[in-house]
Image (cartoon, rainbow, N blue to C red; front, side, top):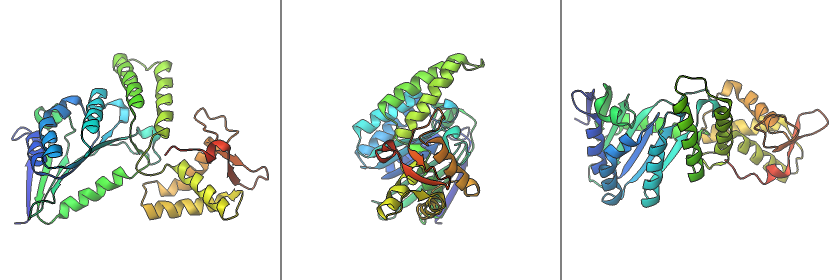
Length: 311
């Protein structure tokens, strides 16, 4: 039988034990979870170390930041692992309010494969367990484990994982970002059920602006627009009509299979141009674009726009 399917609830067998076992046998691991805690990272740390040192595995984790639930100590633990092992990488998926797809990040996907063995084995887990101590062992969770020789379910979940990874919302945090995230997380936790103060709100806004400057896996919408304008100017078109920006951006999204709400995509483009226009009064404006004075919707770049290096 090529496929074995198992349903686990942590009560009959902890999913953390399955994850540790798979880490010991894998050369490639991909994990995407809505949030994580250091307690979860600690539970799998020995098996993770084995995969990275003995198997020379490539391991990556995507952690969600919605509602600032993810533990700062967990992110710090991932940063430490990243500094010690060249085969390890991790990413963050920005808060819903930072996205152009109006999605709350809520998946729990674990993918394991070993391309060294003669008969390659593919294991995928999908269910309710986040990478936390409770999710891996003590919570009442429900997860489905697929073990396959021919990667049918694995391939489908890998496609979902890739769609997650290659979106504008994914970024690589810096140490400075992690420190600021920690401060905000502590303030939110202290507030509890009370209304969040204007000071915390301001700090969250500052953190969002910093996120935009961090590298990611795909270009942001504003970076797409900047590149379109630069390329069109090289072709001798200056300023660049909004209609051309629309058409070129839609081509790029289709070619790169980026995730956007296409029914409102042009509105998103116009929103980015207005937000980051040099005369914009938006508090998050980066003053990247210059709108021509002929009122025909033509755009060029400011000096800041030409020198922009964010995602």
